[in-house]
Amino acid sequence: MSERPDMWPKLDHAELAPMVDYVNRIVQVAGKYALDDPFEVGWGNIVLDVTPRGLRTPTFRHRDATFSVHYRLLDGDVVIETGEDERRLPLSEGSVASFYRAFCDVAAELGVHAPRTSLICEIPDSPATFEDDDNERTWDAHAAHLMWQTLNLVAGGLEYWQAPFLGHRPRVGVMWGGFDLSATRHRPQPAPPPPDAPPFMQNAQINAYVAVGFSFKNLPDRPSIGMYAYIWPQPDGLADRVLGVEGAHWDEEAGLVLLPWDVLRQTPDPRQAIVLFGDAVYQAAVDTADWPAELVGPRVDGWHMSRTPTPATEYLHG
Image: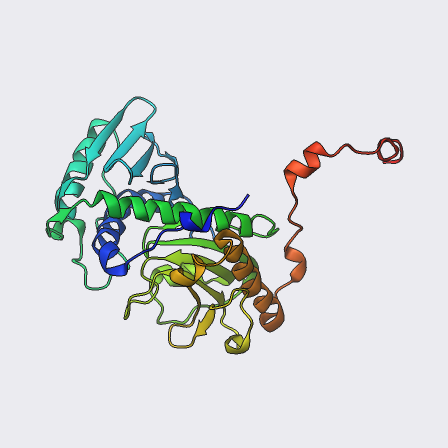
């Protein structure tokens, strides 16, 4: 079943930017715990799930505690939950530094150690650490709701696109460094990253992959909200491709295939448009980078299968 197009909200970059910047920073606090877990190809171990109320970390099974952290965007709070108890921190006012101090104090009450690093990652021009970020913030409940609504809608499309892939595919979720909602398909073909790439990219790009995702800040040098995609290593010939949805295009400067949000939300079926966009990019990988087409299985309608009787002859003859 597809959503009504009017469910896909208008998004204003200037309106959302302060909250996107704030949430990007605070989700990194609990996100750091994922670095203690075994590395999964494509950083699949760090992604935040899009929940019915916000963003949640994986369950961390550490020596001293089993816990998760839920950033409830619709409630304006953060819930730290263990097998013994839970604590809540409000997000109404304050700075990243004050949030970090409160988080560490509350975590300690639950027997959870502080994150082993407080460095802020992948945010240009930010202070070096959470403790240094003392800029006062105001929680904008309307913007937070728009952020959750958008991530929830797009996650549905990306999960549908991702489902038939037969190779390694980390679960669809938010990468807390760059704060993008990501779906990646990997194959075990070595692809050495550029030697000058930052460490997180050097780990991400050890194998070939296709990425399709969404970001509130696609292009750092200009306002841009929408879908993105790329193929690593980047092949030639993407500029001339038909990319599944009218308005999707190759941006040479960014090195990305882009589908602007305003274009996506005005399609008759935005969720299906995400699938068509992703399928077109994967087909480009097949055509230009020798990706195997057979890594994508059929999309099957489970409801049709469960309601359609199997003829008796099929039972008899296998």
